[in-house]
Picture (cartoon, one colour):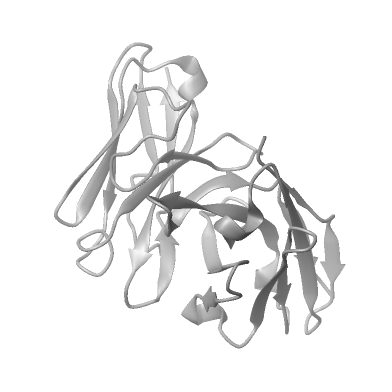
Length: 110
Length: 124
């Protein structure tokens, strides 16, 4: 059972906008920054969003992050077939003194 | 370019220890942190902790305290993870990652470059 809750799957057709939610609590998302990672099957995770809504250089602006209260979201606009991957949210958890990850959301492009 | 090269796969018996290395290149090793994250098959990542090569400071997740040691050697730009008293549920791919900066300060949640991963299998 992950501290951060994500839907197990999300899908969309090419060009659509897909949003992935990440639900937490006051001891993680509510008071600390959220990070998003993308992982293709069998490969290393890649940083997609840091500090709620910042994109590392090289990450397309189709990817955006937002946060409200104890929940965060990752939006993928103009969905492409190469966006098929697992997406994980992460945040510092005060009670565990650790970074915690969500269980991941598998995005499928129909 | 930034690279993190990890040591090879390990097979250990329950109760044993494992030490994984992570050699960094392409950036100033002492200016960043190094964190360790593991991922069991089909599971989400699990953060073990991080270390500062510059100061030697470490911060371990509470669930691993007493079983884990993270060290680094600035002369070889290499970070190490040692996990002791291994159990079968410690079987996973272990990753090192560079901890990114925010205006010069380490941003613990920001793992911006990752090693290729080291498979650790614990089996009797």
